Length: 455
Ligand SMILES: Cc1cc2nc3c(=O)[nH]c(=O)nc-3n(C[C@H](O)[C@H](O)[C@H](O)COP(=O)(O)OP(=O)(O)OC[C@H]3O[C@@H](n4cnc5c(N)ncnc54)[C@H](O)[C@@H]3O)c2cc1C
Image (cartoon, rainbow, N blue to C red; front, side, top):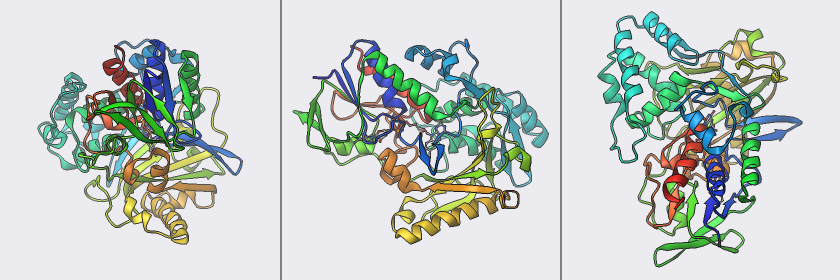
């Protein structure tokens, strides 16, 4: 009999497993796939190794910074900052028609850039930054507050508002067009005030570190082990039934599968809405370094239409009018630079539009969106003739590797901040508990373990 059965070996499930095992709990982590990390993982194809998912880790702070999310989670997982082997971004940008704002980690450059592009707005922007810094954004019982309404109280220029929302939404909103202000504050600090970094060799380094800690702490991990349903007796969970029919008994279940998906595992009709926002992603390998082609940003959040639309492109496979371009080579590597030039594009996509395609149509749709992304961003003329390898994934890939309904990248728009479900001993962690991104998911696994399962 396990003290806790954890569903999913993504970031949140691994963090929860480490935390609970450190406190002497008998824990098993069950993962349907062969590799941990959900879609924030890695793969090998045609002799090359790629990260999938990781553009950047948010929330960078230097070693020894007190009270920051990264420092807190490392302390709780007993990982030294140096072990992550982090390198910071060079600079990133928000690139809209006729307007560009650049930033490095920390707010200094960002404030200067807002002052340069929007001189009449910079005082309001400064006040917004102060408001975000002082806002209590981790309260588990805070009601929904519209970020668009709050931000409009500080800034009146609609383009600047869209420019601020673009990175914050792409890196952490499960809601179309607007987001909860607590989530906005968490992401604003994660992306702008603290900023971007990555382990030098990529996400596989972080995953290896977490797997190592899981093993050291004594938690069990069963890969290729899907959970078919959560078993209940008088409304209380007694364990899980696996895809192969085997039963494991447990005193509690912690699920990172998502709120809608966990409801289904409990045999219920979900009350929460399934997520609708999904992404396509392209990975291009170049015969040269991006800097040699004049591409200097680490990450660029672009919009080519007049207004920024963060919504499902209903009926269309992809909306290339806005998106994220990540250039991993442009992190400030110390001693392990990437061997080849790489560019990744991410855009909003509609799961349904992809799900009705047959095999040849699917392959063609991938080719089409790679071209559309290169042309819409204006990078086609720089990249043509330099691409030696390309790969892409669709919302169907997201669904396959996360089990999220609709391939919803950030899960349901209805977050359950206290992690409770209808069963008193089944809890949620990860994306649908409401802490998004790699750092958010790790913190979620830790905090839900601390909150519900340490007794
Ligand atoms: C394409 C993509 C790019 C991203 N890029 C970044 C980035 O650059 N930076 C960043 O900070 N964040 C990024 N994110 C977000 C970040 O990866 C996620 O927020 C975070 O990793 C979520 O972790 P999780 O543990 O909540 O869920 P997941 O990673 O989804 O893990 C859930 C795990 O549970 C398993 N599972 C589900 N159901 C079952 C079941 N019934 N039985 C057994 N196992 C099950 C799944 O297979 C999966 O491994 C990206 C996400 C995606 C999808």
